[in-house]
Image (cartoon, rainbow over all chains, first blue to last red; front, side, top):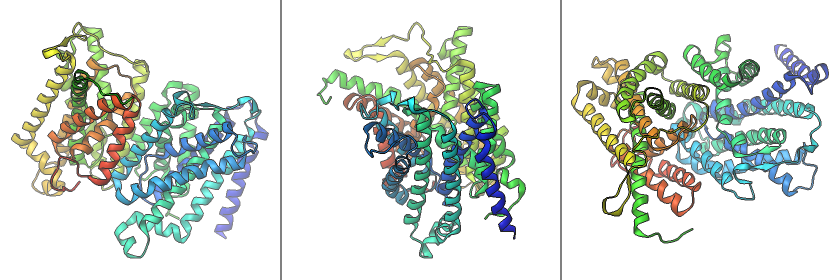
Length: 313
Length: 297
């Protein structure tokens, strides 16, 4: 019975979010924009949550996949590759997820087979920087440091962004939930707890690690694509900046890593803080982010979820 | 792009690479010491360096203090500041098994310092230009910029100082022992917090030296710090963790790598080359190029 209740509550909550643009004036309201960002944050934090929270591989290269997603969308659009509509075209968005996922699998095999723990984290950081240099130096194909400009005349309302964001956030959370509850999820958690023991129990460690890394990249790419369509101007400074790795880490850690609700709580908390800070003290919001990480880590290292003392799913 | 340069340019590249690389080396020594006892990458090191670069910039602009004189003051400030950071922020987290907590506090600190600097000094690049900024020595026709030479000499002194401290003083020996086995050291009656705070103090003091060097050589802005700490990490990977002189050498190798690759392959690519080397070393020689035996990291 308790489970039914949870499902109904979740559905109601999603519905409530879905009707927000009808209630407030979506074109003028700051609320709709901040909720859109909130959904984006959920997608990338769940992506990082799967890789780091459940599989225990701290990746510092998520921003590279985020950027790859945005660039894939822009390149498909500008070069007219798939001959579909492009603006909120599901094929383009899906491809923008699949390209980073494929690249993650390709670079993930050498990185994950040879590097562990801190070294993996540093390795992914190096990988991210290399990808960034490739885009900055990409000449006319990637538009170098100026980046690519999408035709912004198609923009009419923020509503489609809002709903796509909501849909993708629900999709990401549901995907992670299903993975974690499946056999695969058990294997991932076993790897997190003790890699040697997991291997001894017949888990193909590398295969599962690469899978998790790749799914993480897929979700980050989807989010990058959506954000890229929102920006209309994709350049290395906007979509390949390290914030796209640091923010999800911040949100997962503040909410509680390795849980489904943790990143949701963290994303909500952080996006609220950012929005408030953006309105009242514009320049200060990264400063507040810094102070927040320090405070949370110092006083509640298990994250917000640790306050409720709930057991892991 | 691949032309054969004449010998003069080549030597010039080598010298510039070596002199610039010492700065990476100095930062890498700080990282290495902190990693030794705390087992974390102190990612805020780069932002600390930039912070001290700004402090020396202020000393110069507001008080008219020569950077090489304010260096001593800044090192003192750095030592105190480092110990303060440890006691204020890391003391609780250091005792915990989960190292990610300390790591994330360092990330938070980096964010905080970086953006506070943006608020105070804006994001415009700054540089200190003194009367001798453009001074160049020309022994045998090879140009050696004075400030880079000074940086090199200071770096050598600092490295020797740290080495002597680690070898000769009681607390220095305790630091080395703690890097081997923190638990055993605690059993011997050495206060781990004392060791950690000394390490932080030295790390931040070295950041002060690197900061002053940077301010006199190169234009800097608040966000340069993160790039800097990445470079220091590469230097550390080349030199091997826990090896003070190796870290300096790693920095110099990285400096050479950058100066040569930016000349032969083209400006922006030098970053890709250094990260590529970094990845290769992580994968195939994670103990570093200088170390013969594999130590526990």
